[in-house]
Image (cartoon, rainbow, N blue to C red; front, side, top):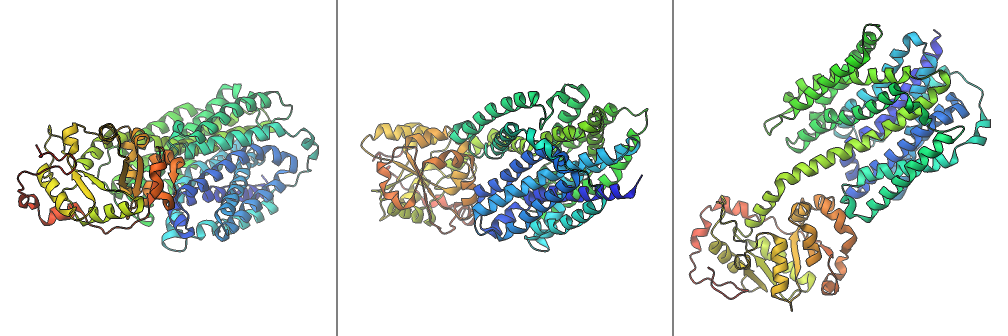
Length: 635
């Protein structure tokens, strides 16, 4: 076989890996990059979702365009497009330019990756084509695993800008190899007369809406957001129209008729599900080590590096195995899935004592299992391709489906985290409320006085929770002692501590607020809470009911503002946010309404006070203690 086409194939491989790194390395290092660029959480989501939108659209168009403009020229164009955008991103003058460049970068990456499969199917003879598919499989198994190591090296050792600059030498090498090795075909510009403009427009609308929905849906609280309804409507309209258009178009971008072949459809769907499942080996363990054990990226990346390096051994080995007639691709896939599921079950046993070492066994199983799944699926799908003319169509279908796997996988993991977190959090949040003013301290007073001034309040009520009388609350002082400590801290201030919840018989905040509104119809109430409570507000009982009952004022608390702004509740409440400059006009607002008050209190902590003086409540032996709101003795 001539050497030059193999050199061209190597160039396309380098370009495809560079495109994968543009997405995956930045996703891993996004927190560091956002911090360096001064970008908050919400724009950070757009950095990811716009790239994914560009990739999905580009992957669908790339095979068709490569036939029209020639594979060599279009590959060089895709490399230049991605490289140019990548070079400019660190120097973007503002956020809008950065997001635009990110979309262009994603489009260039989407153009590049399908060309690897197209090139492999074209230049490799049938006897060795399986090894070409192994090369393509590197982008599905090697790239996600090695990205953590690359991101750790750039952010912890070198400089965050190299998250972007790394693509430049890779792109230059890829361009030289493609220019030298790729044969130059005559262009087929006459195809432009039949270009599927309707299909391209529907693809842009459908894939753009879908990827945006996957990345932003959870943050926007799904169907409680008007934006989510718009995105869902666009998807529901665009995708059926796209399928109808592509089915009857004489020169479609996506040849959907190929999905009627059972083996091809099985391979495409199986690859999609595999890519969603593979996030369990790359994203979850790394997230655990960073969030729970406090690892830096440079310390935690070793568990994914095991998978990455193992692919250079396992992919050729699996290709060699499948090259024998007695090897059943379905059986190899089943064995691989068994290993991956075993690794997932093993990793699910994680507890707070686990460190990096406990993951290695399960990561080795992932390392062996992943190529045993992806390579047979690719072989089954490509064996259903009938002739070289269908190669670009096969590449378009495989890669377009693949481009949607990462957004879907990310969304699924977020939903699981949200549902599992909600399983336990409601009780925990209730306990936090029951520990309030245990004891009262100076920070409570400072925050309250600030809120009174900022909102123009007549007075502040401190709701001292009675706790749950049916359960022993470890560390909870008696209600009388906590109310007495609150009374002492509230002296000579327009603050009225109250244990009215005990008299009302309410347990949840929403019930207490509704009872207060009914009991005091001539008063206007505003609910004041810290940013730490907003961060978990969606876990409170009927939290939207709270927002619809009274205006909410959120006071900043050091270390919690980022989580509060990125919370699910804030996704719903964002449309009701009022400017802090008009905070004193809150009585004219109709709930839901929320105002963010920028105040940085001292770090006084009831926990530290209890640790310093566990018997603090023994000094409060007030008899005849009266509630300062109801004016009745504390029962």
